[in-house]
Length: 158
Image (tube, rainbow, N blue to C red; front, side):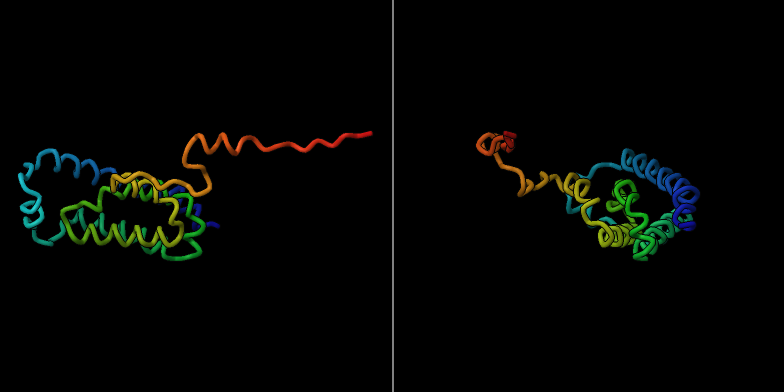
């Protein structure tokens, strides 16, 4: 499809540049931020929700992703981009601005509706929980030995 190819080849590189700039600013801001001795004080401190022009651009980019993946036809055709997109916008879930966090969460929800398995590994790693075991694989190596290799059936030709 023409629109999907334009998004992948022309628009996506521009979006990644925008996100890269904001991620660099975010990491610089976090390095320079004094660490709170108490988590409760860090949560209570809020800045006013007046977005700068750069933050408006970030929210607009995240809103575009939300609308793009919410459109079922385009979302399905672009599902191969979900793992990289989700990993790229994941740090914005912890932004100081509530509007940026909400826009990021909306983008995640839209991507999860298209392909929820694509984002499970990054979400589990962020939550510091191990991936759940696959019910199709044995829990222990001993169980795997009990199952053993599949027996091949040989047919003797007389």
